[in-house]
Amino acid sequence: MNIKEIKAGVYYVGVNDRTTQRFEALWPLPYGVSYNSYIVAGEKTALIDGVEISQCDNLVKHIKEIIGDKHPDYLVINHMEPDHSGAIKVLRGYYPNMTIVGNAKTLEMVNGFYGISENVIAVKDNDTLDLGGKTLSFRLTPMVHWPETMMTYVAEDKVLFSGDAFGSFGALNGAVVDEEMDVEPYIPEMYRYYSNIVGKYGMPVQKALAKTSDLAIEYICSTHGPVWHGELSRVVSIYDRLSKYEAEDGVVIVYGSMYGNTQEMAEAIATRLAERGVKKIKMHNVSYSHLSYILSDIFQYKGLIIGAPTYSNTLFPLIESVVQAIKTRELKNRVVGAFGSFTWASKAVSRINEVLEESHLLDTEIVSVENKQAPGNIDIEKCRALADAIVDKM
Ligand code: FEO
Image 1 (cartoon, rainbow, N blue to C red):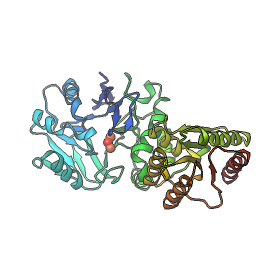
Image 2 (spheres, helix red, strand yellow; image 1 turned 90 degrees about the vertical axis):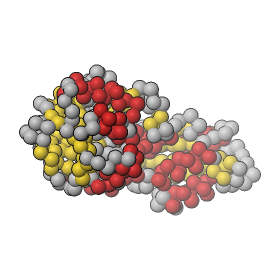
Image 3 (cartoon, rainbow, N blue to C red; image 1 turned 180 degrees about the horizontal axis):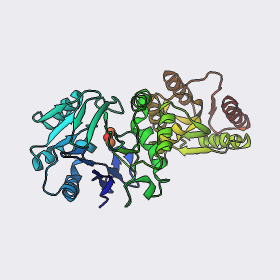
């Protein structure tokens, strides 16, 4: 049942969700997701983060396997989002004397969501809670990715409970700690989690990394995905790069196409990119690729070329969603181009560029390409020139 003693007195008691189809009702979960909860047992016992409401019974079963009929003395809430806090009210039913520990913003949300205001402790930055043999210390790391987010550190064990930071999609398939599993499937799921959920908050993530840089850390226990130990430096480095909006060499082409004409332009661009030696070219037809995967690639690669037809005198709607998602996440440090087509009235490319300008991503030296009706030879040459401009800028 995935229960694991990570270090003496520090246990994983989380649960797997293999039935929810969309995280936040938005993001696909083809491999499920884990809601990670932990127990730190000194003379007193703290439960660190909870689970989504439908998994509460399983969490209680896991808790009982570790502490039997004893009650946890504390529930530390590093993150109040309901995928971790949904079970709070029911847990309070099981364990009425369990004190809820959070910062002022957390407790305001606990009251607002669940009507709980009694038997709570508000902690501030660097406060500690002595469990007897284990000391919890709290680092407030707001906006990773909610205002109340914080991290909890156990100095005696060099364990950091990081909330969503360093988390990934993907249920845990038997093992809990990275070195006991094949971690490779979780790495792209970490990119996807970051770009989908946390991506807007690069600066707060950087502040959180700085705020925890003085801690000796052997284990990072996130709220989703593997516990990181053997791969610590790798995942910290991924988070550092993602939150600085740094990217690898490669180009993402994301396009919509109703009848294949815009797609023909996309193919011409990709062919020229390959001729220019770009090996990592990720193509997404927006009608088939979910936004979740498109964003993940956009956060990974340096080049981005967006194409669409004009639709009812505006931008093809699915590409409008993509450019808005990019704007929302305040994407930076990318080389971006646009292309598109129309039948009688031109709009798609100007709308893409309008949102790119609002997003501070528009490079006026990279000439957009827009063709009327089916692309001819001249349009294809312009597509190849767009690919050249992207490669030259990268
Ligand atoms: Fe895993 Fe932000 O909730």
